[in-house]
Image (cartoon, rainbow, N blue to C red; front, side, top):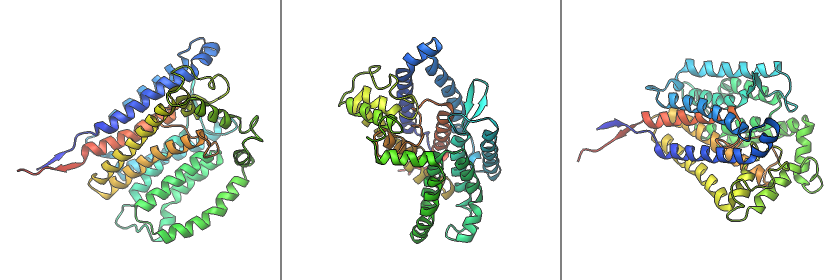
Length: 368
C-alpha cells in the first residue's frame, strides 16, 4: 500500500529551536542599545518577530501545497526573473554600508541576494534534471548556466563577495550531486582560481580584509577589530557560559553582535554547551534534509532538496567559521538566528519547500 508521508516533524523541531535561540540572542544582544537609541529594549526583537510572522506564513503556505508548484518551469523562470529585477533595483536605492544590497520599503529593507540563492537552487534543480540535458556536456551546460552567471555578476557588482562565493559553492555542490565528472571539477577549479584572485584584487576592501585576517594582531584595532572581539567572546564563555544577557563583548565591542556575529554572543552567554547545541541543530537539519532528498521519489526533488539543505548548512558553517576565526569576515548571516528579515524569510521559505517535499513523497507500506 502506498501513502503520502507525514510532514517531517524532526526538521520542524530543529528549525523551531534555532528560531527560538535567535529571538533570545537578538534580544540579549540588542536590548541595551535599543533602549538607548529607540527608547524600547524590545525594538529589534519586535522587528524580528514581524519578519518571523511573515516568514512563518510563507513557510506554512509552501509546506501545505497540494502539488509542488516549485518544480514547474513557469514558476522557476518567474522566480529567477523577479530575482534579477530585484538585484537590478538595488542600484537605484543608494548605498548602505558602502554597498548596493538593499531595497528600501518604508522603514524596512529587503535584500534580494538572499532570495537569489533560492532562485539559483530552483533553477539548477530544474535544468540539471531534464532528460535532454547532459550535465557533462560542457558546451550545453555553459549555456544553461547563463542565468546563474547573470545573478552572480549582479551580486558581485553590489559588491557582496560572501553571497557570491556561497552561490558558487551551492552551484558546485548541485553539479556534483547531479553527476558532474570529477575531472571537469579539477579543470574548472584551475580555471576559477585566477578569476577568483582577480575578483579579490579588484575589490581593495576585500583584499584588506584578507590581509587583516592573515595578520590579526597587526590590524587588531582596525580591520580585524570585530574578528578579535568575536574570538574574545567565544573564548570567555567557557563550558557553560556567563548566562543569558551577561555578554560583555556585545556592549559596543561587536557592532554587529545581533547579525553576523551573533554566534559569538551565543558562545559567550551559553558557553561550549550552547554552541554545540546550535551546531547540533544544524547537523540535524542536514541529516533530515538528506534523508528527505533520498526518499523524495524523483531526481528533480532529490537535487532540489539537496541544494536547499546545503544552502542552509553551508551558510551556517561559513558564519560560525568567521566567528571563531577560521575564515575572514564575509557578512553571511547565521540562518534562523541572525537578525534580519530577508535572511529569516528566505530560510523559512527553504524550510517550507523541504517540508512540502517530505509531505508529498510516497511511502510504501507492506501488508503483512
